[in-house]
Image 1 (tube, one colour):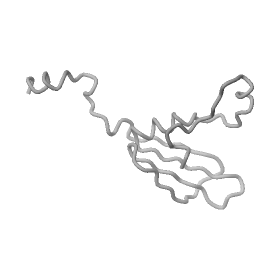
Image 2 (tube, rainbow, N blue to C red):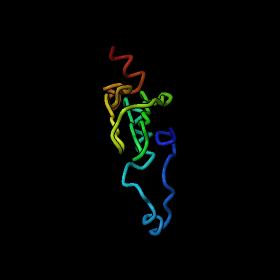
Image 3 (cartoon, rainbow, N blue to C red):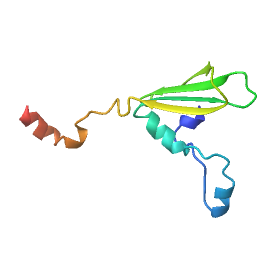
Image 4 (tube, rainbow, N blue to C red):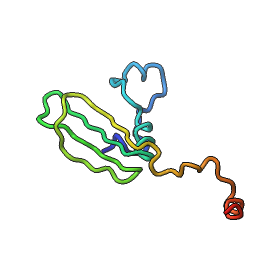
Length: 102
């Protein structure tokens, strides 16, 4: 559940730290940011595990964990990107100007 939490990231402060990174996946803050604006499903299974862990987050809500069938490895699915953001947010004027326009 920490994978999708805020500030879940490596603390890299030197070139030597880069050599110690064992994963080539997303940095933690990317998963948190994506999960806050989408329907995110992260499913992962270790080599000798009998089942996978599945974490679901809907638009920044609380992560829900369950077990799943999945091959060894990790899959990240982000659906309905920007589902909780108004389409016109970037084009809106001030609240007063929008009220006058209606």
